[in-house]
Image (cartoon, rainbow, N blue to C red):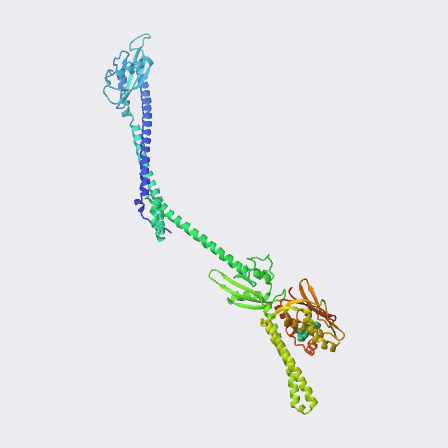
Length: 603
Ligand code: ADP
């Protein structure tokens, strides 16, 4: 976001600090630089001036050495001299030979220059003439020449003297120096301006940042902290203060975020643990039917291998067409659907419930699969029970009704027929009574209403009693009924329940054993557990039906069993009594060879 801060940087303390620092550092540096440049230029200027004067002097000296008229020669050179230059010629005695263009040599400094020139041929020196305050350059050159009108080889020594005012001749140098100083000042000002612009460029965003940060701090009601963290009053100090406070704030937020993250992780872990421990299969998919999550229950129920992971397509995991179609329909129609199907693997009954997820950031569906085989089995059992009860009631009632009709139709007058029909009515009534009593007992035992009174007893006594009750029936059917095992078998159990169990088992054994067969009640001790087995040499039970004979009304050979007075409830009652006594019951049987029902009581 752009924050406009027009010219407010001029009020910035930081800006004026930078500007002051620039002036403080740059002014001495600039003065030093200018001084050094000026000194360099003036020394260079002096050298150039001396060389120029030297060259001019040499030309004049050469001219003088050949001329007889020194004054006119000097006058000839006069236009070539500048206003600060003077030239004259003296002989070795110091007499001025030229025009009085120059003063006589009365200056001691100049005399010394002339003397040096006479001795060495040339001399150049900065001197101060008379009472003048400025230095001048004095040059002298010795000239050897034949005196005018003289014959032979006699020579005389003359000295050409030049005095030049450096200030006059060095105007170029002065000009250069002025330009250099002016340039330096302009550069300084320009640099200052650039620095101001740069500083303004830095300060303006800093001011904006400071303003924004302070607004944020105040919004968070932490302004009391601002002054306590920095003593600096400029923008850097303000930004630093605000940043310190915000850093503090940030720490708090990071901590609360970390805490929230931990809580979210814990919640996610809990959710995963809950989902993983569900028996139901749960699969979450996205709009493209890509698996987002699937629990162990789903893997188990739908036989999904570990190779299938979130990210895979649903059709890679499940290959049940109806299943996939239901999910697709639910996703496209955005409504909950359910489907009951048989698992192709084990034919178990499954129910699939698909619920679309309609969430602003996430769209998909959750599929829940439940195994309802047990429920379906219970339903089937209930249906069987109802039809079993109806059937069991129907047969005796039909007989009773038929007998009654016959009697009412005139059979009553026939004494013998009447007795026969009444006997049948009595038998069927007895059967109905037994059936109802059996159902009531089963209901009581199943619901735990049957009160059991466990006591110490000898199983041999109970077995003997039961065998006595069945002896007549056994002998009438030609079946041998006997007991084997120890003469005493102490037990701690409910006597009546034990009698019911034994009576049912012995009754069944006798019912399903043909004449000349054998029924044996075997008593034994397996470890510390008393064990009673009822073995017969009867018709036996097909192996695949062994698991079903304990169901209510289930009969292997329906007619035979019914004809022998069985209600189909005997083994169901035995099973539930065993459960109540914490005993286990098992059966072994071979078709045509006989069966053996074994009850093992707790030690
Ligand atoms: P029921 O009253 O009809 O005998 P049960 O519940 O006692 O009913 O027995 C269920 C079925 O189990 C019987 O109808 C019979 O077909 C079979 N069964 C029970 N005991 C024997 C046995 N000892 N030998 C052969 N079949 C048996």
